[in-house]
Image (cartoon, rainbow, N blue to C red; front, side):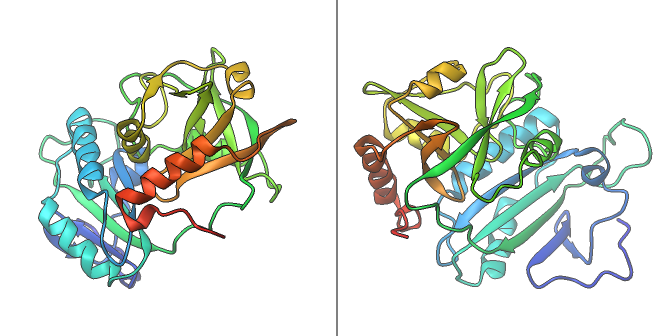
Length: 281
């Protein structure tokens, strides 16, 4: 693996070729060139990774679908624990196919290249709930990649670039048919009566770890949703693994008051581990 001679190793990030730590990512890495890889974003609580098993299982499923070699999970977890140093933080794990020449054909002898990096916790959500907007960008449908947390995030980058208003917290994305899929960095749940609904991720979107945990905690129906379904919902929230449940207060002209069903689900999630106890801020 080629390394850049001028790059100094970071105290907050580590790069590995197989089992060997290296100074930097190769400029010929296929993850850098093509997005040929996967990533996981994990919440750490006092250095522990409470959803480690779920994240690794998703990474392994994605690696199988993309035919990526996996590193040793015991080594990844050990290195992550050293990097986290007992802190509350966010850990990002990136796995790529590694170095390759020009051209799309992957090497049959790829050795896993993986990086781990430590980041500060995200800010607490607004006390009254998130303010959302509709994004103009339409998500493409690609069943071969749907559900995966793959490294090509250009759709999300372009969608997030649509606004710079600090009063807007997130944007909702639809596909070409008008079906609502997710937010730029979170899954979507809506309450209709006493039924929780979440969109499928079989054509686009990411099968979130927090989404899956909530589907195991509550009765949730996977159902295609359109804009009217969201605007007509009794309550709406977003979720991801780094921030847990994020209640929504506004989408365009539609406002939602705090709902006891959302508060109850946040309490149930918090009861599974202290890392997910909702902030009082």
